[in-house]
Amino acid sequence: MYEKRNHILNIIDFKKTQHNTIFVKVAGYDAILGEEFEGEVKFVGGMPFGDLIHLQRSSLSSECRQFVQGNLLNRYSSGDFN
Image 1 (cartoon, rainbow, N blue to C red):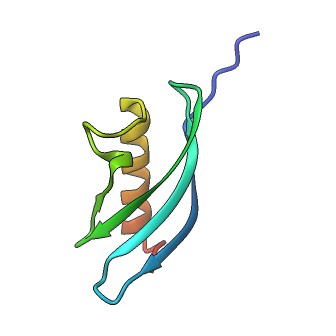
Image 2 (image 1 turned 90 degrees about the horizontal axis):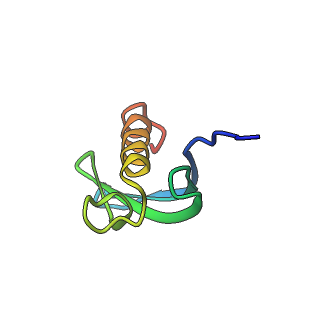
Image 3 (image 1 turned 120 degrees about the vertical axis):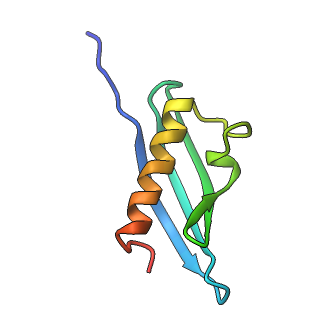
């Protein structure tokens, strides 16, 4: 029987530096590739950066990369990393 899986994103840890940079360690599952992943994203001035979500350097599927980026932006906007 076919079971549809969804992308998963878990926040493992985060740390805010003196310079208002926030480092977020994540792990999850890319449903398109069928693979688990882990990585780190940093927020500078409210914008996320990192190879995990970079358009050309990410090892995630395009759909999962967008899911991770959107999810992190939503969590940042709602104050989850304060």
